[in-house]
Amino acid sequence: MSVIAEDVISFSSMLKMAYNFLSGNSYLKRKKFREKKKLIGVALPFSDLPYACGAIPVFPIRMEIFEVNKYVLALGSATNIFGWKNVTSFIGFLNKLKIKQIDQTIDTIVAEIIDTINKKYNQMYELGLASGIPIDFCYGIKSLYGMHVSKGKNIDANLNFTIRCSAWNKYLESLKTIKNPVQQIWVDVPPRNVGNAFELFVDNISNAVHELEKITGITCTDNKLREHFEIRNQICSNYKTILYEISSSNFYPCNPAAFAEILSLLSISFQDFNSNVKTYLENIREMVREMKERINKGIGMDCSNMPRILITPMFGGWEPLSHEIINELGGRTIYADWDMLGFLENIEFSRSSNPIEDYARFIMNINTNYMGCDNDSLTNSYLRTAQKLKVDGLIFVQLYGCHSISNCYKLLRDKLRQLEIPSTALTFNKIGENIEQVKTRIAALIEMINSK
Image (cartoon, rainbow, N blue to C red; front, side, top):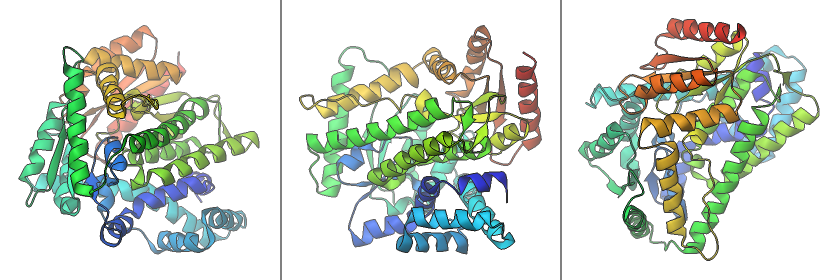
């Protein structure tokens, strides 16, 4: 059995979160056709308003049917009867017996979790290109367009937040050109908080809420918004615990490559909370508890001599083999995009405040101080996270076709040099391409870190 498989299989929360992601097609069908719930397409972590309005937010790739093998299906069936904890404990027991067939089965399960999402991303990328999306868009936008071509007809509306990326906003407009387009709900985010920008933004959010209410037939009360904000804030608190308490420590609860897989799964699934925010909170709480329990018992791996490497940005597309290469070269990988972009900050609210205004302040803070209206704000947010995580090096992913973020690397590199944090850039077009270049660049970076 691979080291990664042996580690990941011991986390019932990891398996459950992954299974909930991969089984999204059947879950969403049940919600839509049996329970008559409305599905709202989202991308990036903008699922809050649909939840508060009684809808089911969905990151479009989760409507796809993944090539999940019989073992993963059997795992899901068994957990429905015995529960996740009992099933994973039993698998762990069989693992200790070192039965070859069981080892192969566990490897297969973990391989499915790791590989099938990336394969589907590439399929959606190819579909986006075949469907006529401009070739000069980045991987993330091409893949998202392919997702909408493939399954977009199954959602009831798409919730669109405009952000600093002009290509992103053009992509949102292009969704209208897809055959039989669904309703598009727009939330224009002001580039700066000047003049009456805040009041206009509050109106934009209120209008989006009204549109969602018309779709769901459910009134979005202040209390429903606050209830969701509280759940979301608890998810973010647990996410930050994993990033800043556990990933920054010198003893990991598992192999560093397995830990990187968990961070990548969190990054992907955070966008819609696997369409069930309360279950997602239960899973991430359990994940933190399991990690701390293993660390307290001394179960895991001493990583004190392994340099910390931050890879960013990954949300628009990145090479998943990177963290395996880093692990083979003696390093450990951290993914922290949503923290760097401000999405893990609390939505500050009180029982006497207007929750729509509270949400507007939260989004405007992201746009002004994290994601930024200029490269200086964006690179400063990268620096803050790199310093808080005490990283030894940074890998910047320069996406082909990205005209908003990739061009800030020179400025970021100069700032990192002042902090004596080595960095390198990886050009990225599609998963699986330029692997040798990736290996060469990462090896050079780690050699630079070790020679300091």
